[in-house]
Length: 153
Image (cartoon, rainbow, N blue to C red; front, top):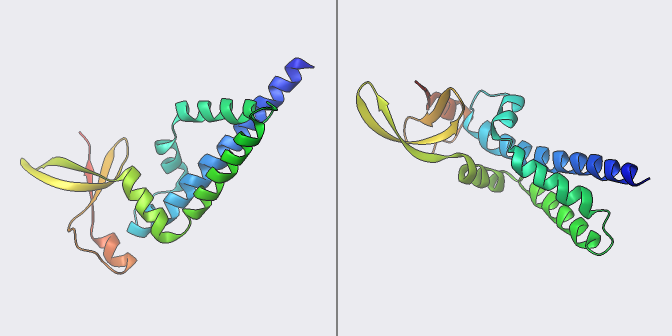
């Protein structure tokens, strides 16, 4: 009976953590990656931003925490609060600003022997996506045309 409870807590923790992680990154993908028109599917994006250590911590906290009577209410409240916050990221300005905070960074690229300061919108294992000009563009097509890709050496 004890092993069954541990297994149930572990599986519940995996489900709840995966749900929370997917909702969070889906909102960022929809309101940040799609906003700039970066041609990327969700699965490679999710694989790039997924943090296994954080996921394991969430599995333990939510899986075990839901079954501990003393702190169970607080863990359930915290989970619901995090889920609501993640769902709020589907509001375009919120999702875009959180996406910029988490994914964009100022870097220096060496392009044709010349140092260039850019703001990387997204960085993958093999390339960096940045904008040619810092001006705010209104349409998706303009933002797509303004993107540049730097292949990492």
